Image (cartoon, rainbow, N blue to C red; front, side):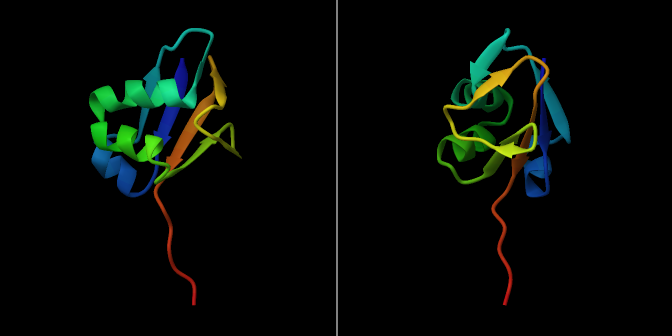
Length: 83
């Protein structure tokens, strides 16, 4: 199982803090985004549109990143601020 954690405003969009997906032994972030789209279409679109930051096991990931069974994926909305 791949554990997906939703942070900040993405929790509200998903309606939960985390989810789990059985994608076999490995998949790509792009394929995982299609699975996420089944329950949270807006988040799937944001991943594909590179509108949110995605990390796999605490490392920033691209759409082509390989995700393996047991990995943890974190989805973070865009941040702004500073002075």
